Length: 88
View (cartoon, rainbow, N blue to C red):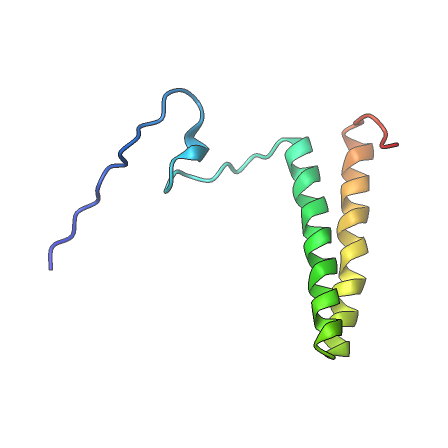
């Protein structure tokens, strides 16, 4: 069977290649983007831990709930390292 790669219907103009499906990932994140990703990771870990608690899977819940503060600490360390404005 012969397959061809179709080009997207909308071609990007300018540096916004992220909007196009199949575009390469940005390897170098800005410090603010990395900080946001770390905080999102912490929130997802907390949500996963709460879900495991509701499912009565206590060992999994302990893991996820103890992993969440690690991501927050990494975000705080990044904030101090890159000298962002302090959070209120």
